[in-house]
Amino acid sequence: MIYVYTSILNGWDNLRPPAIASTAGARFICFTDVPVLPAVGPWEYRPLHPAGVASRTARVPKILPHLMLPADTEYSIYHDGNLQLRVDPNEIISSLLRSADWAAHRHPARDCIYAEARELLEAKIGTPSLVKAEIERYSEAGHPTSEGLWANGFLVRRHTPAVAALNELWWRMYSAGCERDQLSFPVARKVAGVNIATVDANIYQSPYLNFYWHAAWKDQPTSVEFRGERAVIRQRLARLHGLTGGSSTYPEY
Image: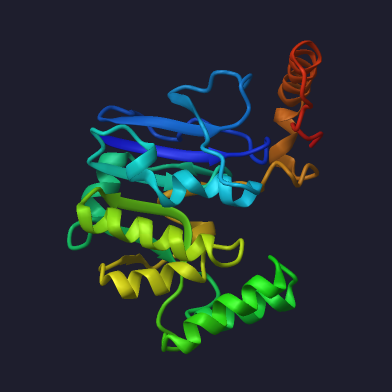
């Protein structure tokens, strides 16, 4: 069975149906922490597994699909919540996993974890102390420069024991490092020795995906159509929390 899945935390993105003619042979799962989302076929909703701060929780399904998806998973296709599948999942598997068990796009701007770390620090993305400590560990361990960097917003995997081992090694490295997963993946991949089929295309102009801005950037034209729906979700959550306790975390964007 092929599972296509995504993860949307705190209403960060607007879930869209896949832009394909048929979904035969695949199931679609959205992991979320919002219990009142409207039906968006063919997506099924599943709860997220908490892992501390939001950025870690959102990545649990992404990094550990062999533990989060049903046991009959043979192949999985992950994409970020702001992306939309535009190619039949069966075609994606047959095209990208011919000679490898894992496929991902090349990073659109860099090919080196050290250059990526410098960019994170300069752009003030993530916790600086965590970025510095993580990249120092990789340097001390002898990870080479320009050893490859991938855009992890789209991951295609064959669920083998070797892939599961890489998933878990990646999670251990990621959870011990900064909030961004681009730094840890190339190191985990090299240590695990798993071959990656690299999609030689910019993920923002991918032949497999449509790109949309995150819902958090509410002034983007692609977010306008969801404003009424999001207002209803906020109202329902506020009523739910008012009756049962707690507080709503669904943002006004």
